[in-house]
Length: 174
Image (cartoon, rainbow, N blue to C red):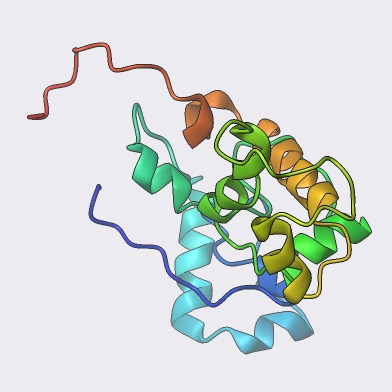
């Protein structure tokens, strides 16, 4: 399971934030005009998955794999719509698609000692905020705060920022 690589292009719209119905909280349409985009094999696979209630269940996932889970419609997060200007900025301008992207965007707020030049306002001139402004973001500090908020919505078991320290009970070699 540690060798699974989840890769996709960064989302640009709310619909593109939907990547994988098994790893996110949305359901793929099997009927109607939106289902026409799916081939028959995919529809059949999704029907069988629904029938047998297939989902992601695990005892422990490595922090690397947790970081590769989709950031939007996260399977274990308390759901909050992607309707605010800040959330749309994270999605479209910052190209946030994975949990690792949320962690990276919020780094200077989570580790203030490593980023001493950052100021908690929209006109901050630190290097990280300048990079975000060049992407088209109007308020990088607010986006970083939203990224932390989105990370905190994720259940601790699936949050790479809140992993328990190793307990020495794993059977894998270290």
